Image (tube, rainbow, N blue to C red):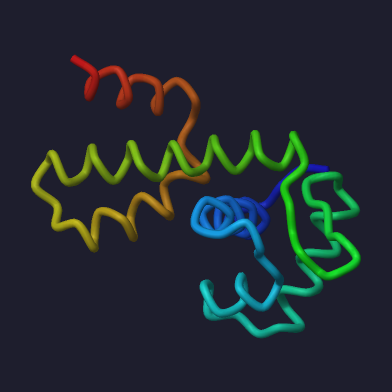
Length: 120
């Protein structure tokens, strides 16, 4: 299953929420993202079918190893790109918003170059 930007955003959100609390449900994702419950429920079903997400009998969400891998990659990109943009002088809020857009389309080569430049 090829992931679209929205699926990556859901996985990243679940990852971030799981870092804050072990008990994350679809309603938490909906509230965090500002999306409707039916939209989030549909997305959770698709992520579950794709093997990226598990949902237990009580409705708690957990990322599968594949889902966690994707989420960690997107989260790292968001973090690094935000740092990069703020280092260039972009205010933190704008940098985070722009990083959120860029993180889904930037090539691995370009991202690795940006990451390396920050590590120097």
